Image (cartoon, rainbow, N blue to C red; front, side, top):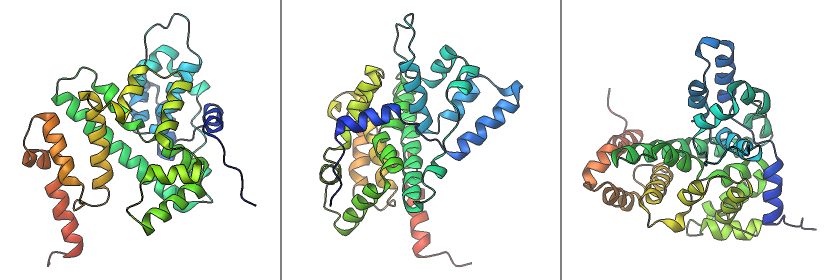
Length: 285
């Protein structure tokens, strides 16, 4: 008998209450900071959290769920959130557990895919941050966070629905023409773009974050920055010979008002192409 699918609303409620896991390396780095009080500060802790999208989401969710009446401005930046709640309160209220490696210890393939996705999100956030700085956008940190969290629904599903995610991956590998959103609809009954929007609203995250993570708002420069960064990180993860990359370079060149060749140099595409070629044709020593 086929198990009944959870509704979108059920998943939103579940994720609003679930303990979101974090990376083992993040937990180690936080423990190291806590043992060295001279290095412990909102900034040093934020720098550790910055590379972990799961913990970033956890911090922002907690802050909004425990929002003070005096808090009138929206908070997207983790360092600002830590200053508001206090570093000691962060360690007491948001303990560095559970770990993704423990949550998925029985699903090693799902763990591998999740770690690849997190690495890709980190790369996207670096691209988005760099381009925002180049464009003299004062919201560069907000844009970095938006790129980091763009694929958060996928990360959460890898943690809590690994079998379904592996099923989607198997279907995509069998037929690369299948659209990801269509497969999500087939397997879960909804697509992750809708899940993303509902999570941001349910967690009362800043409206700016919702806009920056919404591909449908791609006419805005900041949103284009995030979308192009996510696309580049996703396509280059397949290898620097991925067929979609030339379009990415042109999009980024238009965003930065630069030349395609310069964009390729900027993102390290040429070095990446040489690296990919060396795997096929190793240099003679």
